Image 1 (cartoon, protein in one colour):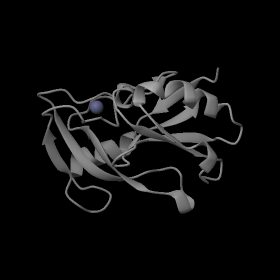
Image 2 (cartoon, protein in one colour; image 1 turned 90 degrees about the horizontal axis):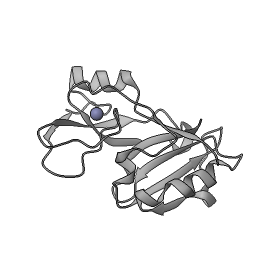
Image 3 (cartoon, helix red, strand yellow; image 1 turned 30 degrees about the horizontal axis):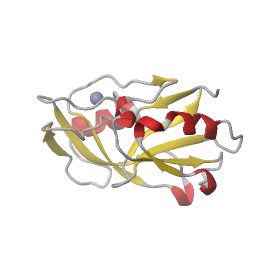
Length: 157
Ligand SMILES: [Zn+2]
């Protein structure tokens, strides 16, 4: 079985959003109290809990570059929640999402269409490991399937 790790958003972007409250589109970062499910933090890869405050920002994804580059709306904790890498398992932000998509990219950042799949977050680990065994795959971005928001980048461990 192919081992993997799930990466958070980079610390510099998280720190910048918290400090400036300006997102990568030049817009104001939105501040939202957690009032239910649906606040996946891209720094600590956990869901926001009631009583916590989240930021919502447009973030320029670092990968892929090229024609498949895209920005994404992202939530992150307003406080410094300590960015975390999840080793060889999917984070809560993926497993508790009812419908996610796996987007696979090669070393040049080109999308590998035939591997793309939409499935329940808690059913994604097996299909993800199978696809990571494909030598064409350099990394995988996991997105929410409905709004298309980036959740994490997966690399082989
Ligand atoms: Zn967090």
